[in-house]
Image (cartoon, rainbow, N blue to C red):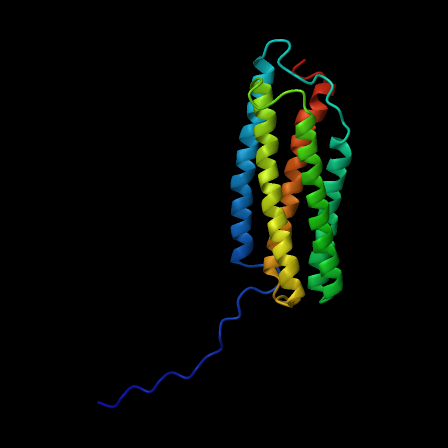
Length: 203
């Protein structure tokens, strides 16, 4: 019997192009699961507050300094990270590096201010259920900020090494999407712990 002729080599698989691909779905699933975690934590706050006795709320008038400027800093970093993503999409390495490094610096500044704010709180983790919820929720968010900072740092390094192109950029898009999620979650945390007391909730 004659040996079978080897098949003619075909084109190699291209993989994801642009920001579409399985990686984007993976990050979406990760974000959905992490969003559920924060939803549980915020639900715990509202449930406990609605059924608590007077005095449960340790900060009836939370100080908006430095929390409000810090919030604006983190939200602005999303815009800067988006500029970095667009820089990769347009093939402009300097713009991409400026955006990604800028978002990293702003995120690191947010983390530093958050640690400072923890240090000046008049209560600690074990003071009460309110304190436990506050430090647990903001602590989990800080863990996500740190993860996002690692992602931004690695993206900036890979951009500097020219790993991406306008066609091969799904990793950048996925990383920036995660950073947008971190920022959006903080907006909900800020509204819950810093703004709802001014609306009379849990007083």
